[in-house]
Image 1: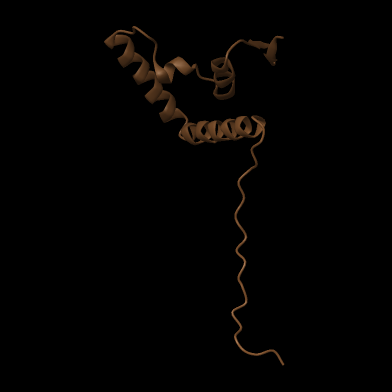
Image 2: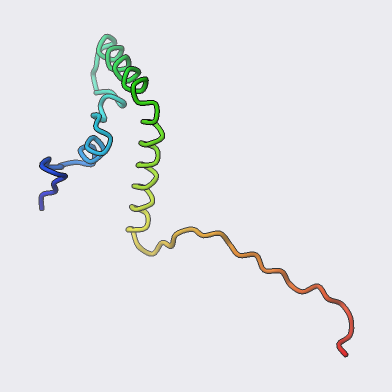
Length: 97
């Protein structure tokens, strides 16, 4: 089964990420076998993108957290965490009338 986001065919998880944030994953993670000059250029480009988009890190972190939560809940037999309700026991001492 083929998967599409808009008119783009998605073939890997990296494609979903790239379409979600608009930046190739390789820019942040690097590519195997890249030279020192390629690495420096990639990091320079990443710094420029972060300077132009100061909220990008927060947006990507929020996206990753949402994706992780969705994956965990879809895995089955897992309930979302909720705050425990504290119940206090009555501490009355004495004799009933």
